[in-house]
Amino acid sequence: MAFTSLRAKENHLTNNSKLLTDTLKKDGIDPVCKMKVRAGNIKTATYDQLVYGFCSESCKQKFVKEPAKYIKK
Ligand SMILES: [Zn+2]
Image (cartoon, rainbow, N blue to C red; front, side, top):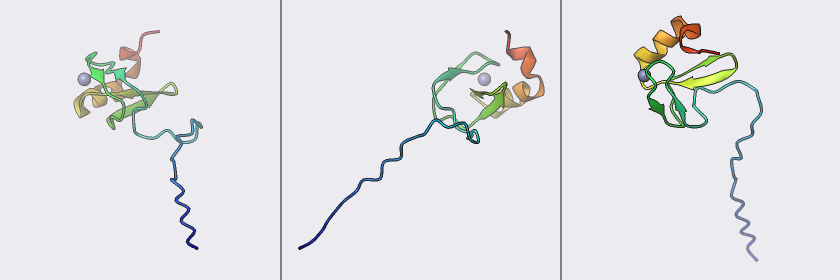
């Protein structure tokens, strides 16, 4: 008797607020140039507990320098 219990390990992404990963969770807008940024993007920066994605490293750098300039409340 062969017990072939194939248990597909599903990686359920838990939405715990541990450490924010450097991956954008969902589609967003590059706050610097307003370009669309896809989920999974790794050019991200965290500001005010939100993760922002960027189209390029230079946009990210601009944002990191002066986040308040690009985030209007
Ligand atoms: Zn950009």
